[in-house]
Amino acid sequence: MDLKGLDVRDWLARCPLVAILRGVRPDEVEAVGDALVAAGIVVIEVPLNSPEPIESVRRLSARFGARALVGAGTIRRPAEVAAVAEAGGRLLVTPHADPGLVREAKARGMVAMPGFFTPAEAFSLLDAGADALKLFPAEAGGPATLRALRAVLPPEVPLLPVGGVDGGSLAAWREAGAAGFGCGSSLYKPGDAPGTVAAKAAALLAALGR
Image (cartoon, rainbow, N blue to C red; front, side):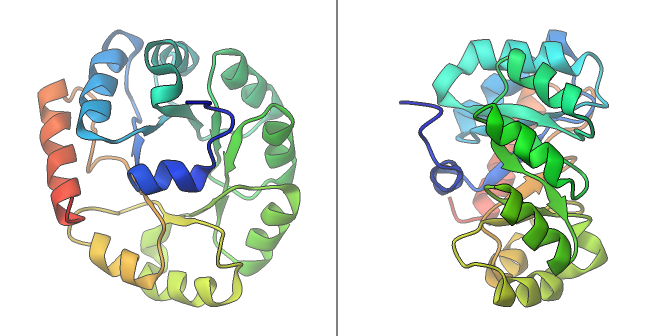
């Protein structure tokens, strides 16, 4: 499989869950990644406010290659985009709407999934080349907000709610038009053992009917 040639929509079709490993350490990240990929979750984000996040991205990228789309979140500066790319990361996730970071990521051949909350932010990010959009903080608006945004944004653009998404809310978000879901503590909390992550993954996938 050609990692660079696979559209983000193809990754989300394989599994719509994006694992957000906030707080993961490099010495545990490979075992956690093994649990996720074995469950079928193949999009993995290491937030940059985790311990040694670039090293975790490096280890995940080396371990899974084209079997997973690995990258980083909470990216706020161009230098961070460069560091993630040089570590093998191919996914950019931001907490905010910054078209410049999207352009930087696309210039490096990465998938760009920036954060947004308003139509103005969404269209500015799409004009910069964003592949998908992260609705954040999703719990502040709920599925009704996503449904309203879905009515005006291009139908081919994947929208992913992030923030407060768990097994009990997946169906409502899906009905509102979500193409995927960013899952943090519902998949991983700092210190979770691989077995715990595997059990959380199974529960979320069951909530999706998988």
